[in-house]
Length: 372
Ligand code: SF4
Ligand code: SF4
Image (cartoon, rainbow, N blue to C red; front, top):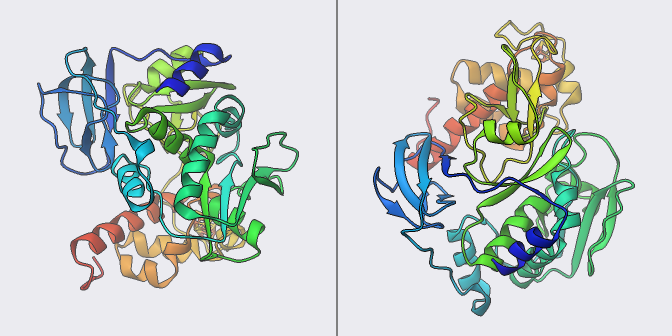
């Protein structure tokens, strides 16, 4: 991890030191490690999650794994620089990168911040430009694009050598990947373009630099961007940002439009966490399961041009295949529908629930998909 460490050593960064104990969040799956096991950084825990610090497993739970740091196990980095093509793509994806292979016309580097109030992507572009460059050159070697575009919000000052800058109209949700792809290519869901966010390229760059899965993320909290080890608790990040949580406040992991509420201050951040926000009690009316009054507001604000009211209604009654028939797959999870819903229905939450069920149904039985 020579490049990353030299940047952190020399750069004006706010780094939260690696904690003694980490809690790595997991999606629903069976972890491949056991309590008491000594493990090295980079080992696969399961479901695309990796050990961020070498140490001893102190707790295994369906939704997280706790590890206490010690130096008994040493990681074994992979020599990725010697690989190319399919072998490199496989090695990267085995470390959680999720990068496609095959030639495309346009590689789009999405540098627009993913949520209002987040500045983590600008921070990565400014302070980790060499890591991002490494990520881009790796993606270029796998995708052989004839054009590489850096998409930025109007007025953003960043540039990347070898990338043509394209400016996206300011305002949420214009920076989401499908909308950026449309703005750059003029086509909806173009099959000759791949969009990789600055966050994804940071991850690929870190993997190439270290030869190990990415165990760092940049998190915006209280107007500061922190370099954070995966599994660091929400409470530790808030403490570093001098933030206090009062009774009834909500803590949101990610952004205010697309994020998810933290269920505990002990919860660890994941490699995809780019923001941490406190929503004070009473700032917004609470989300509740009130009936839809058919005002149509959610339909008018939906950038995917689908009907969130109907889809969430089917999701509420577990008719998940109907959600698919009404175009749930086009939903880019922007959160606009729920934000503007006058009945305060949890529209995005229902949509995410339905997507999760549909994915599980596809994995379990891709041929016979019942209505759940
Ligand atoms: S979250 Fe809601 S508004 Fe956004 S794309 Fe999905 S359905 Fe449309
Ligand atoms: S905004 Fe809310 S109340 Fe209005 S149609 Fe959509 S779901 Fe129904």
